[in-house]
Length: 468
Image (cartoon, rainbow, N blue to C red; front, side, top):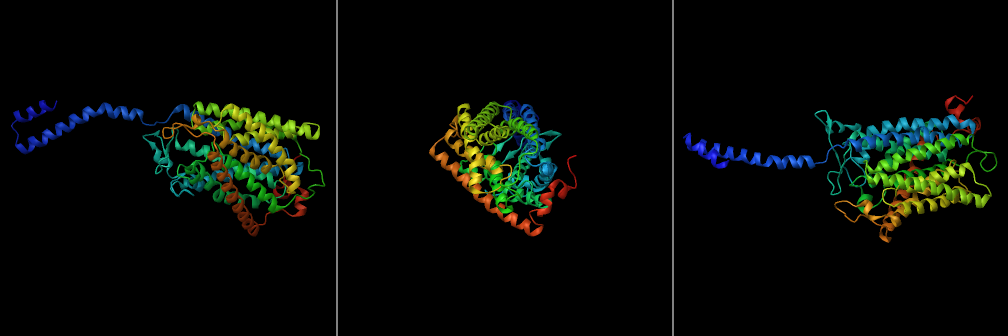
């Protein structure tokens, strides 16, 4: 092709200058034609939106949202007294609404935009960058942590990823409500939820799940939120219980659950929704999602059995509240490990967690004397710690293998120490900042309802409504 073009230029007897230019243009065109197949091959191999992955993540997002409304709302509402049922339902529902706005305005940017290893920047505030990933009417892939060697290019639209992560940001502060149930002002809850989400949740999510986060760089394994969601919520719940103090009549009055049927329905919805929580954290419809689903089911069932047996041995009878609490504890503990362990590891995590969480929700609580109303710390805090640590022991390397790390990360003493450091950092940050935020809210509007309002019940005193 090059020789033919050159001879054509010579036959036309054009001036030497133009002959030279035409020859160079012809050669460039020839090179472009020759490169076209390679360019097409590169374009074909470039990451693209995967419709199967996107469909699974849309489904997972809906499942995780269902965990809060109505799952957690019913679970908690069934365990409080009748006079506080509507207020407890309201807490979960209002947190869903509040955090959706907070996440859209600022939370997502602090968690997942490029910034420092400790907190994201403001480039994604108000979701301003979502439009940049829409080209010619079609979604295109986006990259998290583009400036990091661990950058991750997703095969789902950023709008789906953002909404999926939003559902995690929603359920985490909703879990805390189990610790301060039946005694916190609604106005205080709203302000505390906003501040806590921005100051505690979003930074910890950035540390662990952003490729540039410092705990991620340290090698922390947290597949779906052992540190980010459960330890965070559990420690915050414990601090809330200590700062607010015990409910009136704690230890003397009958504080039995109003309707355990609600609680069983809520726990069942949590269990089903957890498949989106854990298997969805694979960010695609793939084998790792399938393994995460299997380990989630196994750990939940094993923990339900071990809590039931421990309670049966100790008290002489298994209870409905016990087995559903145990199953939720197992779901909590497998969360950081779901995509890193094999079924045998999931069984161990479940069996251990059921017994340990039973001890935390009964013996430890009574021994320490704090009023964690619905065992937010006993189940989520303790379960999250157990799961995070056991992930460092039971992780199976090939499940976390990548091109950069073909062998993945296996359980070892080193990984256990890494996990322990991440757990410790989360506990300290969450504990200290939660205490400070509670004191700020107390100065602004007060934290706790009056004794008369607590006696009357939050349904009437805070919302002017009651169950018929």
